[in-house]
Length: 127
Image (tube, rainbow, N blue to C red):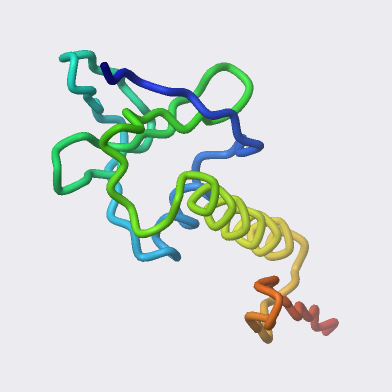
């Protein structure tokens, strides 16, 4: 008996979430419906289609974007926890880059470290 599960996140801004999913090579579409095997549907602000027809969504709950999915039909190359860790990491990178750009900084270097962390080097030119 499957149904939608909701997983809380710390993701609060839509555009960096969308960029994070793109960074991970995931195809997504804005404002669409996802469904479970019981015929339930939920409208989410971002939906990641899966080949099996049971999509993954990120839905705004008033405070953050929750992951919504029928976990019985999870069809990603990562576990749910690993998926959320990867999305959260890329979301953080996108947030830092966006905020830094607003303050006049430019990304000069980005390195994936052996421990899985990402090193960003930002620079601001004074003229």
